[in-house]
Image (cartoon, rainbow, N blue to C red; front, side):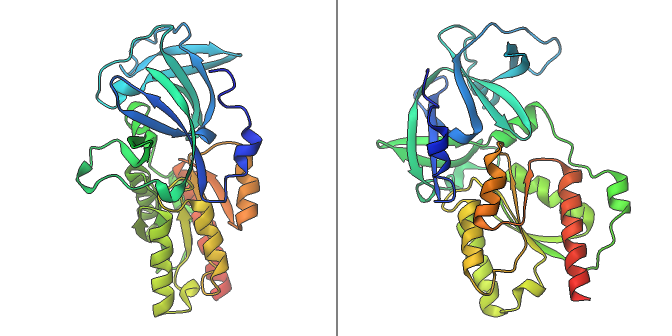
Length: 310
């Protein structure tokens, strides 16, 4: 796998162009899965793992890598499939998600493909609430499933979704604040909605950037002064049909929407995020998921807008 992730600087140029690169891999069985290359630090043969007593069965152990201790999760087992053998024949994908670094144990790694987000589609409607797919696509006439890793981590590691009392006590906002939330992960939508509910803020939920743009333009058709009624847009970056960077760019291009406050809220990690926020014209970047940080950013934004209106 040496060299499979070379050329990261070149791949960075894809961001903001509604394009991405997927690392394709397999678990137990013939199905192909994909993960955004920007989430991946490296791909290695499965190292020696140290078992962690009383850990979730999905956590196969921890690996010591370059002075770091990294948990390794059996991705197949997390998806309720057959366990992946811990052997030198298996691979570990080291990836950044939700402020943490972890390894995903997989059976084999295929290659990297360059795609347009328009080719990344929402899962079939019949996939159900228990599905671990966040999107699907086709490569060489083969179905590729993109896993909702946020759901996996939520089930295996757990994330606190309760806002600290001091954050709620400090809020001083007027009633009537409303937010548009765009995220393809059902878990992420639930987490964001739960945070806004605790703050007493209404929200509208959509599943991708194109749907968000359609909703915003429909609202603007009904009322050109949409900025006076919509407090902000909170958008994921990785979404089918249209990513969050492109959504932000389209918002800035529309004279009716250009003054909307846009927060990019994503599991993507890396220093390139801040430069991309500036490039596309977003107002803030927040890494997923910290209920207090998200709540603080929302309260600060709503308070500023209330002050402007006053």
